[in-house]
Length: 367
Image 1: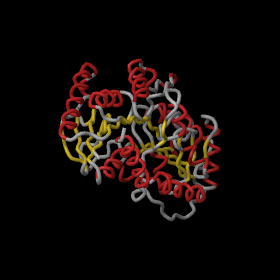
Image 2: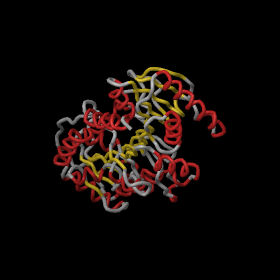
Image 3: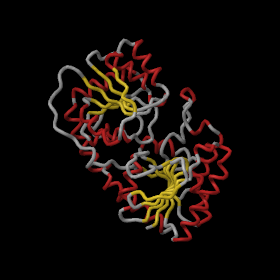
Image 4: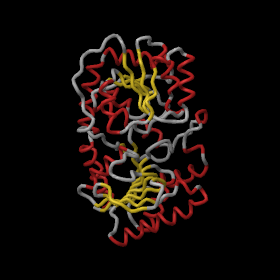
């Protein structure tokens, strides 16, 4: 099959991990299919290049500003049309149902190609207190409404997000992105001393709920916390850690190489999620694949792991509940880790999920 992806950004070369979940998926999909990727914003320079067998067209829209949007849209359609004339697409697939989805939908309609849209972030969310979510912007609302209404198929990565997406249409398919279970693997480890080593992986932005996590850590004297990820809240969070008198127990690692993440997961006693929203939560699946004990908020994929005994989930977004979940996960670390790994192998492994996506692509191609 010839499959077209429209994404906000993609890795500039084979050694980069811009959006790791998409990189892994692209590598797997391109092995037996013709995959063409249209990256709207990143890389920042226009280019066409190969990525493990896939062809990537970088449209370089981000650094030019919003006034450039009509030109970006025209360039994207021209590139998609040229590819289609060279060899027709069987299906076009957009990740994110705002601008990527709107562009893909418009192009697919003109080219008469079936169109799949995947809700991949906060496009359908409006968290005003956090200034987060696509529904806070009227242009994004318009784009999302059109895409959700007109796509041949809409997918989400979790049942949590399916519930939200059903406000737009009833037929929402749950089909997550997969995790590379060869890269993210468990290792045998001895029981640690009294200290609880906590790990959180996520950008330092309000929607990740790090303040609640810091307050939870303050209630667990034996806990240390490492936060992996960059963002504009680093100074504020460091200041909050100082106010809570836990700065000696909290470290901010910043962004680290994707290749180094597995070792970080394996070294942790508990991986904690404090987010107010997650579309899916790849960090949680990576941690589960590494056999970690997981505790956190009831968003993204985490509730589904918890339902089958693979994680501990909170009922409310409160530091006290997060503290209790972390303590429970630590006490049941081996049991939770074993169950989480088994669930990933069965339902979320890249090779398993890839076959489900290929089946969906083939089904849509018949429309």
